[in-house]
Amino acid sequence: MSALSDLRPGRAKAAEQGWFAAHKWLLARRLAQAGFLALFLTGPLAGFWIAKGTLAASLTLGVLPLTDPMMVLQALLTGHVMAVSGLVGAAIVLAAYAVLGGRTYCSWVCPINPVADLAAWARARLGLKEGAGLDRRLRYALLAGALVASAATGTIAWEFVNPVTMLHRGLVTGGLLGAGAAGSVALAVLLFDLGVANRGWCGHLCPVGAFYGLIGARSVVRISAVNRAACDNCMDCFAVCPERQVIAPALRGRDKGVGPVILSADCSNCGRCIDVCGKDVFRFSTRFANRPDPAEPAEGKPKIARAG
Image 1 (cartoon, rainbow, N blue to C red):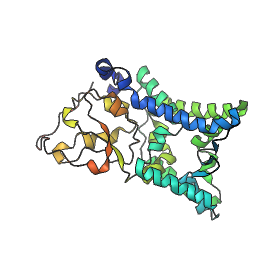
Image 2: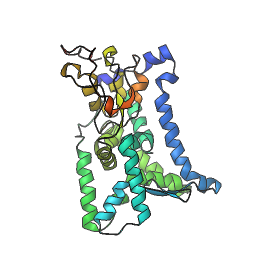
Image 3: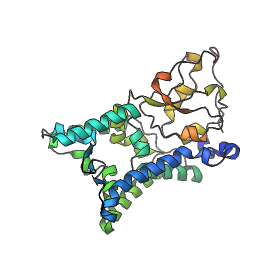
Image 4: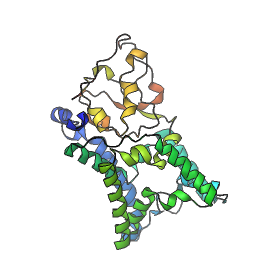
């Protein structure tokens, strides 16, 4: 059993500051995910169209085009000429995630995220091991493969098998067929994450997440371990982080003069580390605040986190 699986992240903070304080960013993400889905459902359910299309390409209020830049790149590689609205929509999305962080899409918009979170929660409760040691760089290999496939076949290849589009289209389409398609995709991701590897799809394989990570590699909005001197090595942040490797450089880099801002492109700005930390080590900040605190100890390595 993984040492991290023994933990109940956020229990200490909930006991001291209340349940809401230990879950506020998680609740905000769920509301955002539900809200984005609701924009597409008003038409089929109420006859009032706010957004038409899917997360791959949509038109909001008949005016604002939004297009997945990865889909546009695939289309361009096929040699097809993109409509101006599609290019404008991609530019808007690129600009937004260049500021907010590309993988913000993964934790605040993507409908697969609640499924991945459910699988991670179930793994912890069932005491399952981490599973197969998948290399996180596989997602970049799949991204490259998707782009090569589009260029070679003359089709937007990834959209034929993209779980995000399939799940979202199934939810928006509704009916028995749509519900069945959405349920099948969600079940496949859930079983993969439970049976093969923790955060297996989103954290190791998804080329869409890899692409958005590249988009937001230099983004402005970041999470910072601004109060890292107060860290008591409880490991709650590592237990909930979908990309645990991003935390250590910011949290434990004091002896190397590394600033407290998490700069990794893999960070999804989900805010769970902020939620569960009883010492309020983390908060949202910007990449420009990444200067080591002169009051922090310059010598000696931080304590090694306890195993369990």
